Image (cartoon, rainbow over all chains, first blue to last red; front, side, top):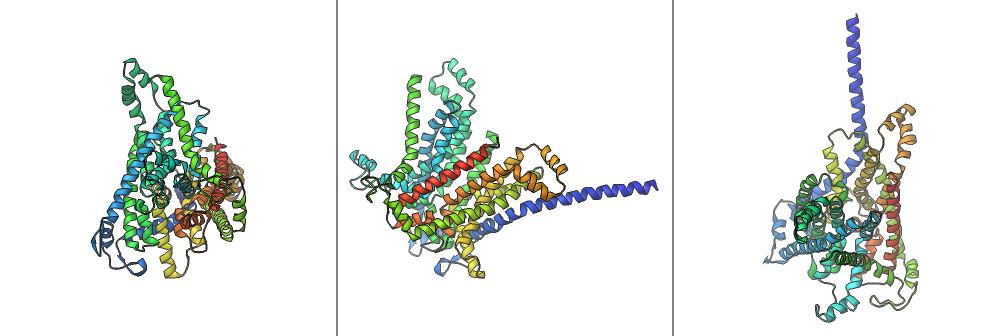
Length: 313
Length: 264
């Protein structure tokens, strides 16, 4: 009798526990499903479709068609009806080159700035960081438009460049590849300052003092005691700048003119004007590959940095 | 190199960078008050471009679209993102790697890939079913998609910052889950919700690329209008709209920061 009682109780308990587990699982399902379903339906599915499009054939009106083929990738490499043309390859190389230039420029500006902020009085630092971030709250079209106004022919900056002999008369600094580099650097400067600042803030100054005590030259002290400590922040910044810069659409479109096209413009044109979806999708795949390489690098850096997730926003 | 000279050099460099950062915005704001339509020379102060805005129907409709899009998408994203943020908190001991990847996806995907994926999807969906013609609805869907992660992460971090025993106390106080949500959960995360709303709003107003590719002929927002106007040839009106947008977004962002600070 007592025996059957205990089994009943035991089974009641396990029943209670499994009920609780079911309730928890249902809770998880209830809270997470709407958001997860939304992202899957309206982002994962469309991106998967886009990737599939890259392997289809270009049909009338630029819409994708069966059969499957690698035609779009050949076109991306420059093979068209009229044989090989270097246009797309130039665009790809220009994207890489502009990304490199802009990232380098951003590093040159952000490194001293991040260091400077970290050495200022503590109460000023948040305000200074805010001052760096605020311009990026403005719509990027408006920011690019601001640069158009500044660099157009006849403006003080253009006239100055003219007197220095940097540009031919009445050309203006925009549209040009230089304007694109500048616009890209302008857009992504905060992305570099923030992770670098985080690195400088944690800087172990004892190492620097030790180096100085050992009569290291300032350069040697910097190179052996400071630079290695800021490297994770620097690399994180490079990823945060280079990846979005590589796929940038607005800046080259507005500041670059016809000869400043980058991969983002090539892709966009295939979906609006040029109308060759598979070709555009192939370009998008290239961008995705670059993004995932960047994310992978970021994760490795993140492990060394010890969790730098705040950097994202 | 002596230390003081280096310090002075750095300070100068800092102020030069500040000028670099604000010059393009300052120029836009300055020329919005220009008396002539020159984009290179300031000839006098006037409010004529602002007057012209009010009379321009296209701009007014773009303004209305921007506002409708931002408000509706932010409200939907707030509801969905809030739930997912709470789910992530409550079940944080489970393995939710797939969910984290899903949530970070809209943040890490390049804008242009995001935009054209949605466009390709909506266009084909419309061709097959007749539903979801590119327009305000598709734009709202796309905006909600990139707003959800930010809301979820803000709400999640607010919950993580709370004392876990509060949840036990709430359980003792309020028997029904609905009452717990209304009287405990929502009031405690209110600052996070307000902050998330303003951030979503800012993200929506700031977005150009994704809006551009998911919009229809009737659903141009202000950034899309500005884009078109720039492409057609610069009109000084753009400076006036841009100035108003810079002001509005700065205000919303400040609100978002203010309410996000409070949790500390």
